Each structure stands twice: as structure tokens, then as C-alpha cells.
Amino acid sequence: MDIQEEIKRRRTFAIISHPDAGKTTLTEKLLLFGGAIQIAGAVKSNKIKHSTTSDFMEIEKQRGISVATSVMGFEYNDLKINILDTPGHKDFAEDTFRTLTAVDSVIVVIDVAKGVETQTEKLVEVCRMRDTPVIVFINKMDRDGKDGFSLLDEVEQKLKLKACPLSWPIGMGPDFKGVYSLYKKELLLFRPHSKQSEEEDIIRITDLSSEELEHHVGERLAKELREEVNMVEEVYDPFDKNKYLDGQLSPVFFGSAINNFGVKELLDCFTDIAPYPQPVPAEEREIDPFEKKFSGFVFKIHANIDPNHRNRIAFVRVCSGLFQRNTNYLHTRSGKKLKFSSPTAFMAAKKEVVEMAYPGDIVGLHDSGKFRIGDTLSEGEQLHFKGIPSFSPELFKYVENADPMKSKQLAKGIDQLMDEGLAQLFTQQINGRKIIGTVGALQFEVIQYRLKHEYGASCQYTHVNLHKACWLSSDNPKALNDFIKKKQRFMALDKHGQSVFLAESAWMLKMAQEDFPEVAFHFTSEF
Ligand code: G4P
Image 1 (tube, rainbow, N blue to C red):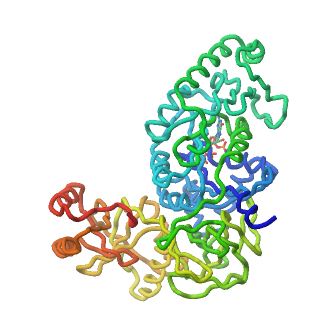
Image 2 (image 1 turned 90 degrees about the vertical axis):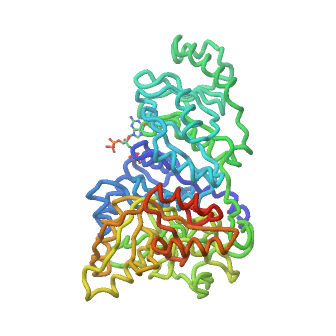
Image 3 (image 1 turned 60 degrees about the vertical axis):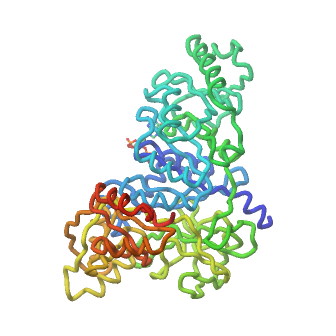
């Protein structure tokens, strides 16, 4: 198979959801279809295994949450599918934001009873910003929940996605009979815990007025289904693949992941319509996946997976060309040539050394501290991939050295943890004090724990009253300089040396915006 065909058969995507909506269960069922795992429970038990084999994961284990983001690859219908898992915990939302920069499409899982939840809203907002194609899977249809039309309203209003139902549920909860696939025009009957790949569970009904429908789902539900499908066809636009690919239309499926119901249908449609690796914008130009020369970027750094080795793994998304083992590549930030003797690829729960990887693939590179989130590798061209911004943290604390004998270790530790994207460091211009900003409270504990266990350093936090970190821009350099001078007390530098305004309150930010109309305030480091 030539490289073009290899690229075209790749589908790299992420599953996102509010915790407990069923992301892990759905991932596992997809892997089962792909033959990547043999038994149900494998993905979960893998989660637990990680937590016992790594110090860092102890925290995760204690709290019973998944901090890790991993990659699972499998083959299905001649396609190579890469699922990028995302941490469910809200404190690690920024990890998920960054993972979304490395995928070509997304599946959103929604719990039928809970509907669209806040975490999902934020994540889908990032997808919308990037016009990422989104498919919605409404899960847990075996339980009572909201009706189909209300859920579609939520998808449209809260997620601001234009919904396009491609399946429609028949009943719900104890009454759930299955779905009618509007995509394939066939009835899928629900049998709890069936394997659902058996042909007898699928009944092809091209004409919904056929009496066969009554025979399978009973009179009441048959009538309801006909009415609802009519309404769906009247209210919602027909499916249009190009609109989906442009991020303008989102197919919606209903099912029950735990019962493996509607999952194969979702996967089959996904493999039909989801995009293969797409061009990726760099500061210099757009990089086409079919270009001959290799390029890629680091979207995630995972530390300390193996407690016997303090190394980190940098996850690189291959954007163009062929990545090859033991080949020199340019690390564009440092200008140094790097080569990798044991790049790993991820197939379900296993990881293995690979000789090569294609655009759309994720390779794990051993890193002794050279990489930072957003770093680019190329065959020599000075490229810098865009779209991996830092987001303004929500919580801030002064960080101070608690062990004067270990100040070097502390500085190194903080530097490396920030490179990993665990949190952000701001250095106040007026006094050089350092402030750590995070999305969630949990990171502060993780940082303290890791500094101690990995670097032998101790830190302590003190309170600082801050509302937001704002990156600045202006068409008028003088106005910007004026602002920075006047607000010196509130100015800091981020890790990249960019000026950041630390607003103490929403009111203070509003005043600054009013007083300096020529200065624009941004909540992300890229704008
Ligand atoms: P997450 O990764 O999004 O956090 O969710 P996860 O898959 O872990 O699922 C959360 C809970 O919802 C699990 O139950 C899971 O079994 C259940 N679940 C997933 N899909 C369905 C479904 O289609 N129907 C029903 N009724 N439940 C579903 P748990 O009790 O928290 O965990 P477990 O003990 O079952 O592992």
C-alpha cells in the first residue's frame, strides 16, 4: 500500500463526554468490534493497572478518576482507527483541549437522563472554534431519560451544533425496543447484552408503513415511531456529508454502550463519513498530510508511566510525510537534530516499538525533558504548528520554595512540569514572584506530589487573589506599552516570555478594557 492510501485509511478521533456518560464503555465496545481487545472490562482494568504501576497515578487511584490520556489504535474494515482518550475529570480539561488539536473528528457521548452537561459544552466549544466534525451518541437508552426531541434541542441550544438525527429511538428505559436507522433505513431491535453484530437483530424495513413494524415493536410504539420519524424529516435538514465535514452538521445516534446497542451502527457510519487526516495550520503555512516530508507536533507529555524510569513520553501527532525510527528530525524550537530509537505506537492496551508512522498516527517518543507542549518536529523546515494555545487558568497561587537546599531541583521540576502543560507559570515583573495557574484544584496537589517524588523538591503555596490571566494585543504599540507601564504591578511574563495582565477581579478587567480601548484582552495565548 502506498503512503497516500495509508493516509486515506486513517481516522483519528477523540471521544468526549461529561464524566460517567459512558465514554470508557463506548471506547471499549469500539475496541471489541475492532478485535483490539477480547474481553469486556479490558479498558477499565487497564486504567486500574496504570494507577498501581505509577507514583503519579496514586493520586488518580485515590480519587478514582482517570488523569491519563492515552491512545488506542485498531483496524476495522481496512481502516486504521486511532482513538485518543481524554481525561474525564474537569480539572484536566486543558489536557482534553490539547488532545482536540490532534484529532480530525470527535464523538460526543451524552447521557440520555442527564442531557448536555457543562463539561461537554466547554469541550464542544473548542471543537466549534476549529470546525471539527462532530458525531453525537446519546447513551443509556436502556434507562429512562429525556425524550429524543428535547435532547436534540439541547444539542442545538447548549452545544450550538446543528443536529441531524441518523437514528431514532423506539421507546425508552424498560420499554426500549431499539432504534430505526434513518441512515440505513433499517430497524435494529434491542436485546439487552446481545452482541449486536448478529444479523437477526437487524430487520430491514424500507417502508415504515409496513405492518411488519407492529409485529416487532407493538402497535403503540409503531405508531409513535412513524409520527416521530415524520416530524424528524420535516424539522431537521437531511444528512449532507460535506456539511458534516465542515463542522456545520452533526449526526446524532441513540444507543446503549453497555449493551453494545447502536455501537456498530455508529462505528459503521463513522467509518463511512469521518475525515481522513486533514491539513494542519502552522504559523508559516498550512501543512498538507500528503506532503513528502515529515512534520508533527507534541500535543501531550505523559510523565512517569514507568516508575522505574523517570522519563516522559511525548505524544506526537504526525501531520505530514512518513515518520521513521532512527532518523534525524529538526526540533524547531531548539534548532537541534533529534532521533528516536524506540518510538512507540499504541494498539489498544499494548504499546510497541514502530519503524514508521503515517499522518494521522500518534507516536510516543521518549523524552528526557527536551520537549514542551506545542513543539514541532520537521525534516529541516522551520515550522511552528499553531492552535495549541494556553487557556487562562481559573485558579492561582504563589509558589515558594519550602526547602532552601533544593532550590535548583525545584526550579527544574517546575520548569519541566510546566513544559508538560500540567499548569502555567507566571513571573510577576515587579518582584519576580512566581504564580502557578491551573484549571482545577487537583493540579496543585499533583504538582506538589510530583515535585517531591520526582525531583526531591518541596514547595508551598500562598494565596493570591486573581481572576484571570489575559494575553494582550494592540494595533497601536504605543497604547500597549502605555498599558504595560501603567499596570506594571499587575503584569507578568508567561513561560514563553509573553506579557500577561493578571486581573484581580472581573470588575478590574472591565475597567481596564474601558480605560484602554486600543488594547485587546485575550483569554488564550493564541488569538
Ligand atoms: P465515563 O468513561 O464517561 O466516565 O463513563 P463509563 O463508561 O465509565 O460509564 C459510567 C457508568 O455508566 C458505568 O457504570 C457504566 O457501566 C454505565 N453505563 C455505560 N453505558 C451504559 C448504558 O448504555 N446503559 C446503562 N444503564 N449504563 C451504562 P458504573 O456503575 O459507574 O461502573 P461499572 O461498575 O459498571 O463499571
